Length: 118
Image (tube, rainbow, N blue to C red; front, side, top):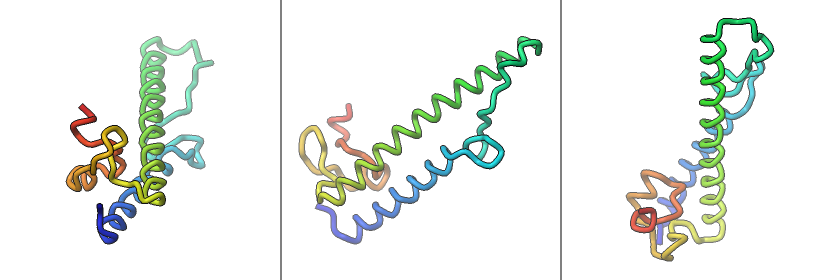
């Protein structure tokens, strides 16, 4: 079982990552999401160059995939924070063994040990 100091450090890491992801997913005042990702498309401008249209579609699809990955990580972080509240954090959901501290330090939202992840 994790000592309270280590668990608090991991909780801080989880909360910081949660805040970073939420900020990245939130639209800003320019109508775009995230810091560096553009989401606004000009699909109605069909008269443009086909290469520009293809580039725009590729960027749009890439951004959607990135969003899904970030949303998935956000769910894992929420589950880890909930497990902390229930005093079940750091226990593999498959084999019910403790997840090694090294794994939790590297990936605090881990819900399985490395053996079960394989």
